Image (tube, chains in turn purple, cyan):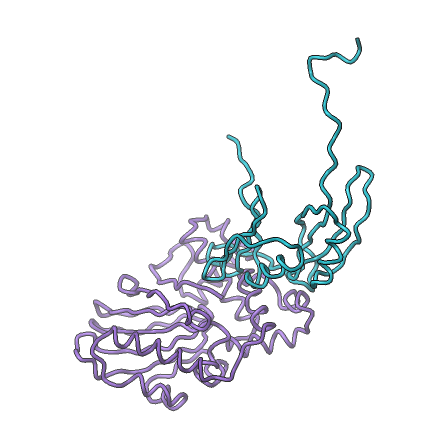
Length: 259
Length: 144
């Protein structure tokens, strides 16, 4: 189901923290599948053969914003180095809007066609550490050379959705920023690739998952605090977005979230 | 069991901007800002006033209604004590605080006005409570 045992997030250089939420690595120790849950984020991932040194055979994957889970087949020894890009920074790093790839991934040649600069990640590397440094460097350079900038309003709107755990309605967010709902719609789609309602639903799902797993709340308490109308509502959302019931949480990897 | 007030923490969109605003508008001084820019404390004496980034709320597993200037003010206020509330009010508004109510004299001898800060939080600008007349010692009966 998951390769959470081998997943780890690395400490970050401070100057990356504005655009990058996490740099992570993972090496699978068995065959199986890995469940990817919607988290409102996009990742740039380099997949490689962890048994190979130097590493010569890499595949770049860009994961788009999703609203439903999907499973990725993994084999023993498959290695991954990834950067999770903060909402609002996708375009700055990759040069195109995340909405162009909602609910889809770009793999290998498709990823390189969408962002040719990614080719630099596929040069032979001594080891995983060099790949990490290279991916980190790539993002730093792209950010430094990009003219795209998330406006203070855009940042504030995205932060409001996050801070409320997806519980604010679009009309609330629009009202508290003194802008129209259309403006909120436009900002959120541009930053995350998802419509505000879908983005909020993903955040709400993620928070409920944490309330159950990390805060160990009962299903009734978690549903109430997460803002679902009742437990049945929460269960439906869990089945749709995660493919499991709140009563049987799998050992999924929950990424660390920051706005 | 007894508790004492430890901190007052406001979750804000921009910790650094909020600290700078409180320095400019109210003359408070920063005690420190964490390098992550997600947490800061002001030098406010016995009762600590802190600001935490909204991302901290999420990291702590909390969900909040974020404070925003154009929104209805949340149901709490910070009360700051000044020797000259009228002057403090003018300076706060000049520094960008939103005027809500000019300082006025209260029947109990205090001067009290209200502004909203850059995030829309209510801040009371007041003089210190006047000293109450000294209480009579308990062992002296009044109906002698």
